[in-house]
Length: 340
Image (tube, rainbow, N blue to C red; front, side, top):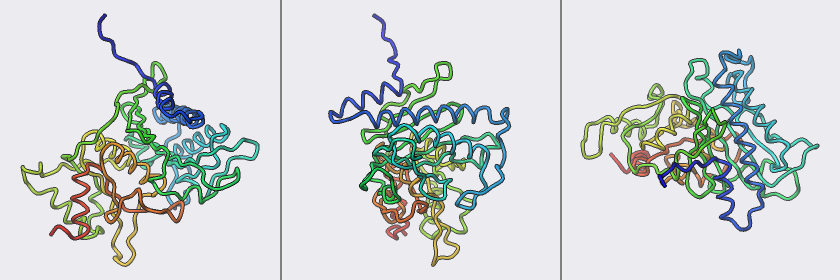
């Protein structure tokens, strides 16, 4: 009999992962299925945004003081409305929302917490660049049925699962539940996410870096020296590295996950006494960090492992460098003064 390609849907993959845990109740599996449907809906709207007249600003700002797009609003509503009634969550929190998002009283509560960035890269909406959605799941740890801010303020190392959807030339979903990183590509003809990248492993060293060099004048000295180092010619370490930057975290990290290299977003140090990081720990940095580590990579603030950072605020921001382990380790050496 001729060899045939094994087709694995994300639902089947999640069920197979559940079967590895004898104590699993199925709640987590159903939670992920609900999320997958939300990603399909967002993907559909992203692909027809121009035709559906949902491009452009929504006319208001989010809690971060950033202009919200119509697609931001759509993605936020779609995830909330898909996830609020399944009985698997005790609360949610989003980059776009001011505070905790409670589960409506009329619906049952569950034992998980969902943190998410509904539309990463939304400033790229009107130019048809890649966008994404990022999610993080924790177990509830406080007593009672209702979730609290404390349930959200957990270290990245305590995540049950994390992942992202990238809406580009094709829609891909990448996730980890603590047993490696797996990627699925949406087949529009079937309406199914199919396993396309099993057990992703990030190369130990890459050939490219991703950073907004327009901010160089506000970088710390260690980051500035490191990026200049990457531009120097040295065949032994594959330098110079190529610059690749889209401005959508999901898209920039997705390339590095598959090809290797390093993504950087250092703090704004225009006032050295008060460095200002940009990316949110709970909704962007921690989820990407655990994916990087599960794929054999690394993630650091420059001073400490990202997954060890204890959150103190649901909208806390931190610096981030993540990607190939040798590149990240080299970056830490520059930031911490171990490299001249």
